[in-house]
Image (tube, rainbow, N blue to C red; front, side):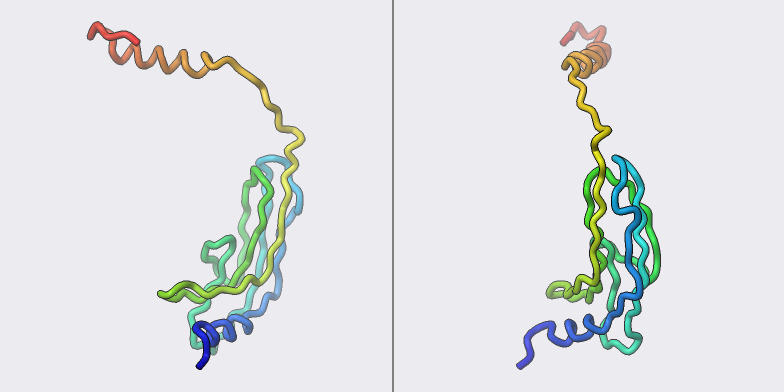
Length: 132
């Protein structure tokens, strides 16, 4: 007896990646990287095969720009949705690194945050005889 998902996995093996890439492969902090892909999903499949990029459904052909704050791995997958759990196959993946060398850490007094909050709270209760 075939195991659950055997037919689905066989169908996923027929999905063909014509193109996948992410450029550039290194960006500055909050820089933009663009993923570009073109996938052929067999028209004669008995299953509804969905293409995903980082877990989100996308068209079989497309591109999308992303603003990055940290290293990100872009994962292109083919997925068959199933009530008992999705069955998927990773088609391609590519990482983009983020250069954080321009990032700076600057200490500041807690009062920079707490003083405006205290003033706001005090003004909200003025006249009631309540003060924080």
